[in-house]
Image (cartoon, rainbow, N blue to C red; front, side):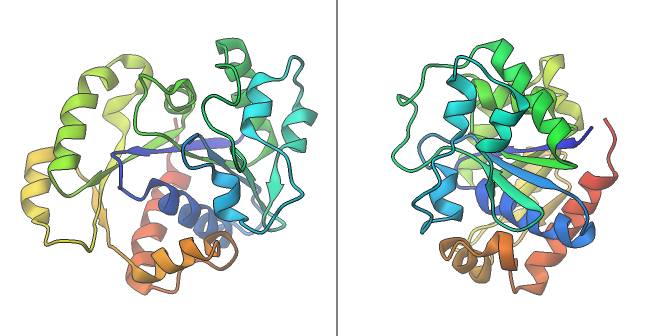
Length: 246
């Protein structure tokens, strides 16, 4: 059964960029591994982000969650292949939270069971709340490991304070989260002060102009990021996930 890695955190902490970079780097570490990247965001659908020129593909996570009947073959029909080893499952262009009825727990359990059996690694790009996003809540509850990303600013601190009481529930395995700072380039950040304020921070992911460019060019999954410092941080994170056991 495949491992599930959930990428969760505050808004603006580059969760999607990190998810895509992790998929590319894990694929380089284990070239034979099948990887599925799942995008849970209904406000920024993942399919047009990773394949902006793909107009014929009509697959969608929303269809998987809402169709009356659902089997593992239905999941596979909604996967968009990006490389021969990396596939994407997410919402499609012009879809939003009102495009489909809310999923029930039975369907969510099916989704995660089929994801585990369909790939060696499943990387889930979560939304920033487990309260209103059932897919995010299930992602974290089902995860082998969860990465929690914080912006190194007041937004990150406030996010941590608001979400910690919810995540303390045993079902989320909060004490096992890998917590990291996702640095930005818009202002000077006091990393030491943020580490002290947040506590239990295992590392930082540096801001990378090359990562931002690769993201905007929909190139991360195919080509990665040409930035040695950024790749060092992502590789370190990828290896800690691959080696982790639930």
